[in-house]
Image 1 (tube, rainbow, N blue to C red):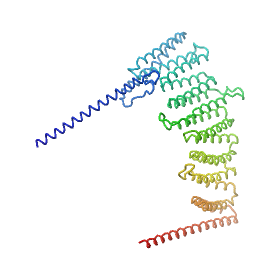
Image 2: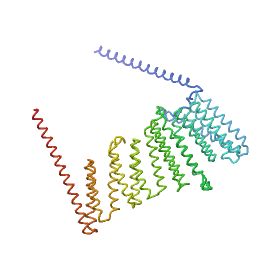
Image 3: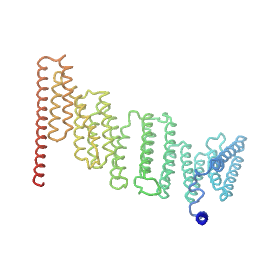
Image 4: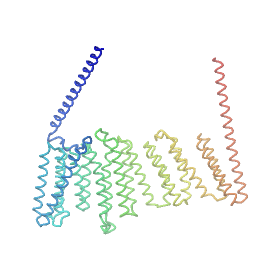
Length: 567
């Protein structure tokens, strides 16, 4: 018993010794990993490479809350308070009528902030980063107040003040590219857009904004700065919409003034620049859905800008805008179809171009005359979807046709050409989808069923509006017969269901409406037509059932014979 106890104690001691040894090894591995990381960080601090302090400055979510508040929160709070202190100090000397002294004080303050950033660059990395960031902000603010938003501007000439601001922004951008700091670059791009806005002149605003957008796309192309691109896309939209509402209508002095036509061209060029991301090759340094997000954001922002531009200044003369948009989008979609690696992009631009065509048609013919062309356009769009091999175009075109039909029936519903064009387009569209299901990458009958529903209800409505009251039931019965024939020819059971549903509606209309209001002769005609079609369909089903029973019996007999021959 004693020996057993001693052996157990020895085994336990061996296990504890091994655990201690493993723990020591893990500690050594962690120390080596930290040492390697520190060596790599020191080696990466080269003047021509990216600055590790400003490339990716992130919060440590795993650290305690107190540590995050102390290191990050207080750093931001201190710099914000410092910014206001320097701004108020500058304002004090400027209000005292000493603008030159205020400028000197401001520049000395900026220099002190940059010196503190350099001093804390190793011991307090994040604090150094915030000092550097707010140093650029304070510098821009002081230079901005040299002329803009100042009662006593030190620089009276607006062009000179704008050049000074752009020089400061350009220097900051040069520093950002040199250190490969995405955050500093984003701040510089934002300041460039603000400079374009505050100068309040049309051509400088357009030129500065377009150059900034081009540089943003260059940074994305060369350095994969996708966060900056998305951020500037959103900020640029806000600045553009504010600028558009800020310009009063009184700026249009004559009908020939082209100020807002130039705005349309500027908005279009900006959106076209962001559209170039469709040619960017896939890269692990940015998310896969980034290209789609950028294109959708650019399209949505452009749509809002166009809506504001039209409502404010062109409520009745916008056709030329949308004709130009449709031409660009369709041509660009063809180019993307041939050269872009992102397969969804051609469909998006083609769809936007088709919507622009619809708006242009509405602007030319107005409602309800434009409904016929819009309905025909729906069919043409579906045929073009075959070339694009796009499920997206097919789906969106289907829902647009539904909305168009509902809006037409709600607002008008009086044009016989449109009434019959809708079911014809729905029928042809359903046939094309059924015929080219693989090419359109359609795996279910959802879209086709929507077209069949449009066909069913719109054809009932069209005949109800076009045919005299005494012939409505007969015409519906005739349609039921046509559906039934189609089910036999096309070998599709859905048309049989449509035939029976049409027959049911015809019977309801016959007993509830025709018996009360039509003459006896027409009642006899309606009842005879109803009886003939009903009996014909009934005999078809009887023959079909007997045929199925005979086929099943013959199969059973053949199976029995095989079993007898092969016991």
